[in-house]
Length: 226
Length: 171
Image 1 (spheres, rainbow over the protein chains, first blue to last red):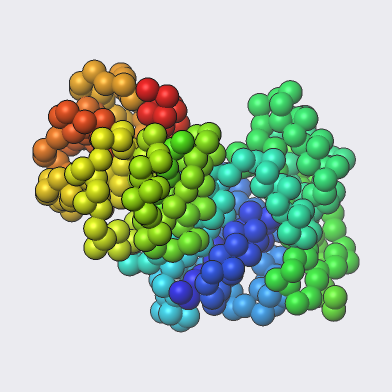
Image 2 (image 1 turned 90 degrees about the vertical axis):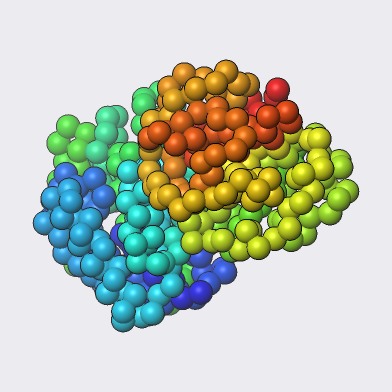
């Protein structure tokens, strides 16, 4: 089946892509850029990295910008998926949805209306298990945003590795957060993965942080050979 | 031993519809319906028929007539409920529900009670026949064979109501 991946550039959509690729042909990435920082569906730091990530995977990118008002962003998502269907003849969509019934049901509805299959290979996956699989599958992701106490600036830009998983699992049990950031506590940016033919090297970045809210903004980056 | 029967045409869908059920029960064996033998059914204590992707209807072409003869407790989830309905000649109607909805229990039963939210993902359902255990938006969403322990659940209990699966496994 020819599939398009709803791709944010983070660990979940990269892992979902890799799982889907074991069974089907991935023909494009679909990326929604939201201008609304409060967006329920699409706000992601370093969303522009998807431009380099799509080049690294040698996959075309369907990129749609949305103002991010609740209903409007769903219309824009539908437009993006329609565009992917028209241009790349996709028969289905892959998402990295884990727990959000809000997100998953809206994408399911759009796929239903457009006659597309919808695959959510990470659905209901245990969060620590998910993080371990990211590391085991050699997806190299850094923390691009933190949005919950007690996550502070020392986490920004740090790699998701076994040590980090241990730390996040500990925090998750002492505070009410999801260790893999499913509730938006953590956003990640993938710099390398086995599906990348080149890897991303960060040349310049800036950090913004206050009160357990912060982003690691990649200002300049390039693809280098592996 | 719990026999989990996958109704998924696509292997990739099993991560979404079968794996979460495997994570909820202990001591299980999973088989796809196309690989199922009479021996698998005979050696099971209880049987769960899973759901599958919204666009998948291949399972409706398959023969599940063993359901008419079995005395094993069966829980059919979404596609699984549609299979039960088909085998017991309960008509399926096109009715799309996607997302969380409120469910109201209308008959005392072993699996669910009271009012709760559940996750729906279906385009077809059975609206008559069997005993109605629970309703959503005026339509049956949990049904039971009048005499046997054969249950149909059109919503996905593995998403928001794992207790329903645990109770089925235990009772």
